[in-house]
Structure formats: C-alpha cells, structure tokens
Image (cartoon, rainbow, N blue to C red; front, top):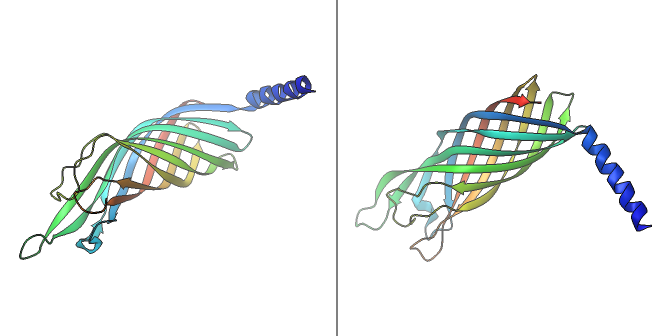
Length: 201
C-alpha cells in the first residue's frame, strides 16, 4: 500500500513538473515610502511623516502550474521617509527634520493567481536585510548593524509578452535598540512600481 501511494505521488509530481512553466528575469523601478515610529517613551515627539522616493533592482523567477504561481525575488532596494522630531531634552524644545534611509536586500516570495493569461494578483512575505546603519540626529535611536526584518507585500501585475509591470504595497516593521526605557519600532510602508523583462519564459 505504501509503495502504491508513493508511486501515485511520484506520478502526480512528474505531471505537475511537466505542466509547470518557468520564467526568469530582471526587474527594477521606483517606490514612494514613509516611516512612522512607535514604542518610544513619547511617540508624540515624532510627527508629520513625509514620503521619499526610493529605487530597486534585481532578479525574479516565476514557477506557474495552471493559473497558480510562486514568485521569489532578490532585490537591492532603498526606502525610508522623513519625519519631524521634537527634541525635548533641552530647556526650549526644538524641531528638526529626521530622514531615514534604508539600503536593503529584499527577498519577497509571493504566491498568486494568473487571470486571463496576463493579469496577476499576488501576496506573500518579504525578508528585508539592512545593508546600512542609522545615521540620523536622534540619538535615542542607536545605530544598528545588518539585521533581517520581515513584512508583507501584496499587489497586482500584468504581463505583455516578455514585459511585466507590477504595483505592490509593502509593510515592514523594524525594531531598534534604544537608550530609552522601551525599544522603539519603525514602521516602513511603501508603494512599489516595477518594470521587468523575462529573458527566460
């Protein structure tokens, strides 16, 4: 019985492999990202988040069986945001503009459905590895070494021959070590627009 089940499983696996479509390509684009800070002794000292423009580029692969696909990627990306920081350690509180710049290696793995052979809906986790250190003026956020944080991506895309176009929303929560009594976290949100080219399809 066990041998019979293994044989059936092998036949199903071979059938799915024969039906699978594999694509490999390059992609790049721009993003609009912002940050918000939580978990500090006084969150109200961080105000007025502003978006900044980021960039990304790298490789993607896609394995599709019927209309279901999985798409892993490896992308070098920049993101961040601007926020107003109120320094309350002085006799007269002063405001300064704090800019966060994240240089990252992002590894999203999305699962989706291909509709009408050109329109895609997909979502999945993303691992984000920091490649730079924090260099702002707010000393309550101490510098951090390369660290992996996890988040989510979701979006839509279209395929026209070898070209791909994607619009996604990404949300990653980054934790910092801090000199404060609690460790703050930085929520990095962004909308990502990508153009890709499949050189294997």
